[in-house]
Image 1 (spheres, rainbow, N blue to C red):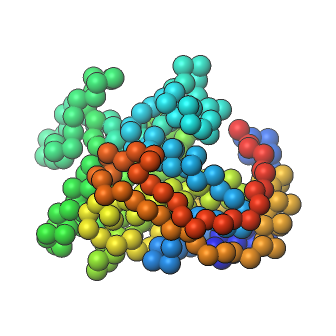
Image 2 (image 1 turned 135 degrees about the vertical axis):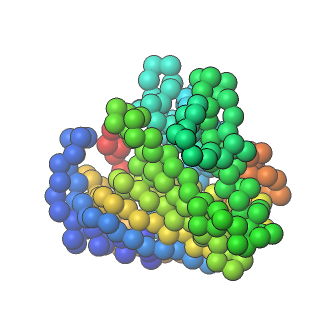
Length: 287
């Protein structure tokens, strides 16, 4: 996609050298934004091969609400480096997507969305299912376009108390949905964006999530928009990305999605067709 190559080119030309916790310096830019039209096909990069299966397993894992990587590790090792000896993560995206902690009782006058609150089996505390809230709200919008929650379809993976101590707080920490006509749009905000390794997966993941939600709730997929607060390229990724800039993007692939509710989706319910990428480029991972 030209949008991704434009991002790479911009940061290579304008990034400032910064040190960070990993020990590998980056070229970094502040607050980069772009948008992708999902009507033109599924935005899986073609200027290098992306391991679609790993991304799909990761998304299914997010949607499960699990806080450990045991099940995911059977399919991909993508999160193993950040898990503890028992395979648990201090910050697991899906845990907060599906089981965001809420107080036992609020302040006087506060209201809580009790429809999506339950007692968590593992912690015993109250949790809020943000994904179910989004699905139900989108279905309500189909019936009542003036629903009060029209501009409140936000999912947060950022819990301040958790993030203050976590080994790796959420990078793509919040996303929101917007309905325009019959199109469902998604905006992702990311505090830290590894352009070579992470961003291609982020594009693929949240675009797919938007398509899955649109299918279940009767909308068409519209746009994926992405704001990166610290958009960076690790210095040992520069040469690989320069090689990628020389490549011409190919046609976008398509997805075949089973007619099933989002929260019942399995790996076999999504099929990728027409994906013809250029050769894989290996980038080292900064842990």
